[in-house]
Image 1 (tube, helix red, strand yellow):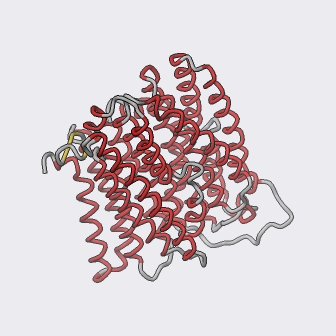
Image 2 (tube, rainbow, N blue to C red; image 1 turned 90 degrees about the vertical axis):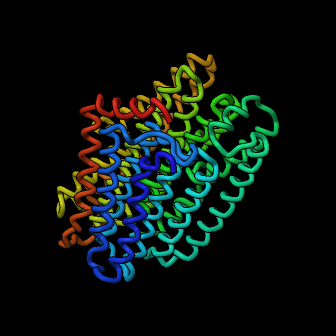
Image 3 (spheres, rainbow, N blue to C red; image 1 turned 30 degrees about the vertical axis):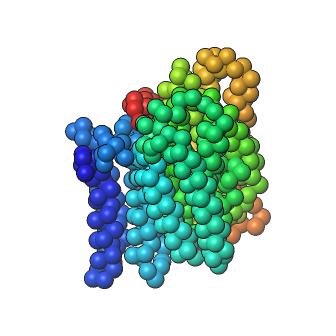
Length: 476
């Protein structure tokens, strides 16, 4: 247990999960606040470690390595799961300890993926996170949750088997499960390494819901509780992106030309399918799920830009800005939809008349998802286009200019999709629903306003955003 202090947040989550189970027996009313405030405290511990310089380093014989990039993802994951826990306050359930306990377990697996430097840790962490997510979906209120749970189970089984097959192949080629050792041993590309890479990439593509491995995400988001959907799109997706990034940049750092074409194909398909399918949705959760698929495409293109040494930092900064701002917007929209009691676009009609503050904050988060000015996501798109242009100029692959054009075109499509939310709120229709005087839950309003303000703040103070992601790219 060398340097196990870097895993203090994970240890706190284990203790928090046990405390939730104990509270279910003696103080059921304390489960929700205990979970939410405990997760916030875990983030505070992580922040304290960063301030005193104890946040990074290897642990458990280098099976876990916490660098600036891992620290960034771990902090974002803890904030996302705390927000999802707050959203769960307003959700009635006969066994709340199961919901909060599974949420904490899923977050524990997500933190493991963000810091894994060994295939065994990555696979175990992905299994823990996926199994907990399966339980959360099973607790959903939807009548179709059994079908959704079965689909998710089958997808996880197939993805796990494919990835495990690829991992065993890599072990046979490199003689180790360590990222660093494999990166040193697998420097000469050949056909066997290509096959192993494709198997691993295929398994990881399921976790990030890249097209054509995305079909499970809309069903899981729609069939689960709002808090579960918020965590799935705004938190668990961060862990999946962290896992993919660390694998490609640490294990295959000297073989970027081997994986860049395949990642480019996944990115292009995800951008096109995600943006167009989101445009066709009227159910709000499915719309956000397909928009998340499009965001995955933006993130994968950032990794392509990071595959060249000259544009590596630009690509990683674009990746971190993209996932951070998209996560903020997604969490805020889930909180706003839950506060408004809306499942479809028509449910938002007339919201500005009966709850003007809620309508304003919800519109701000929609603008953030659209990556328009007044939202920090606007700088993320600018950063991505810049990273692609640097990549083109350094690699001399001028055909990749089409990727920058694709980013701009799909941004317009996704902006139109996101702006359907404020359009439904402020523009009257003939079939407006009956206004409701029921006050929205306070935790949902708190998450909504925090996300809206954070998005606007990152736009008016972009230097802070640039400094944050710049510091995170100094090491894995």
